Length: 93
Image 1 (tube, rainbow, N blue to C red):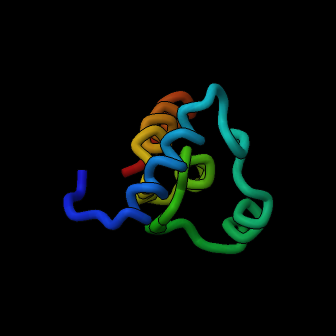
Image 2 (cartoon, helix red, strand yellow):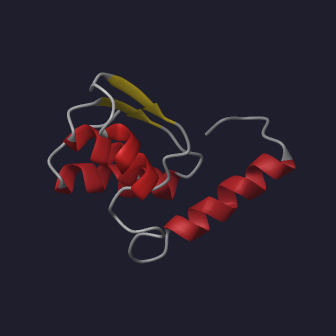
């Protein structure tokens, strides 16, 4: 855990951990429609997925052949993202 976080940062982490600890996926396990359409126009390479939450977009990108680096404030989101990647037989960092 990062030290010296502000009160606001701690509250945001708490909010998203609580949201992602719920059963199922907060926004579904499939990619965001805009992201899915955009990704089809690009040539696979490396992609950074900031605020990737439960990983639905990062995992989708990995399925399309991208090298994905995904991050999020939420440890609960990270856990679900890694499980989703494993279930879909892809790798994300």
